[in-house]
Amino acid sequence: MNNIMRKTLISSLFLLSIMFPGPYEVGTLVEDFSGEECFPQNGNEWSLYEYLSGNDEGIFQIVWLVIFDADNFTSRTEAPFTESLYNFYKDQGLTVVGVGANWGRNYSCRSWGEAFGITYPILDDTQLNIRSLFTEGNPPHHVLINYDMRLIYSQSGTVLDADFLVNFQEELTIALDELAILSTRYNFTIPNSPQLNQCYPNPFNPTTTISYSLSENTHVSLMIYDVMGRQITQLVNSWQEGGTNIPVVWNGLDSQDKPVSGGIYLYQIQIGDYIDTQKMVLLK
Image 1 (spheres, rainbow, N blue to C red):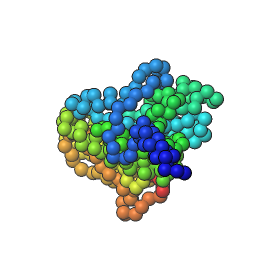
Image 2: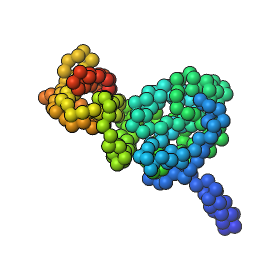
Image 3: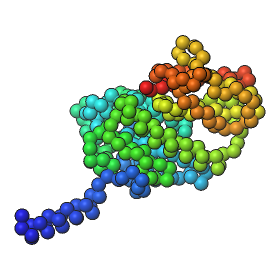
Image 4: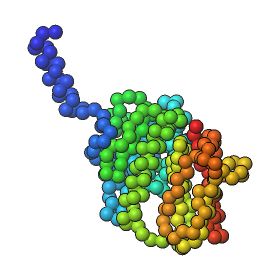
């Protein structure tokens, strides 16, 4: 290759790098982007920065982009699980948005959402405009964008894989903990009735946070049981002041400080006459 051709090639690559800067790197500020919603409402415009609105009132969000191909078997397999994770975390401030492409052969955008029971919005990314912002690889690809529009996670893989899920949930838990701290600046109200919240992360490994709200000063008992109803450990047994989202961490140990095996466990709270029990999954 002569010098003229080499200079021409370098100039062309330089121009391409300006026009197509490539995927964002973790830690960078994500500029606003938008896409057309194709499920559940067709034609609505979705914009990333609209989730910045309301921050003055203490409303913060973590945005999870589920990037997928409709003709990809792994994307189809993990779709229902993304919905279940969304339901686990949405009350803590998680917004989920599907970013789909390669429709037509097996699924349309609407049939995808209906087939897998999706309730979060799906954007039509047929031209791969959004995908190209975050990856040059194949889906599934998962992205987490923090409340301040910083990219905090961007990896190809499936949340059905235990190792991938643990890594994903570690980043999500850190971000959600930041939201909880931020929200306390604005929310000091005492709830009208006691409430047990979904623990997060769930599934988890090695720790999860269980939170609850108290409408008054009262005695609290928080127990962990296995699916056979056998007591594993007692996390709380004390008189506490009323408050919102009181956190308790379980590290997967029993009452003898020995690690328990992976599987389904129950956490039960008793606050006066109020008793509530919920499930969680420990991955090993």
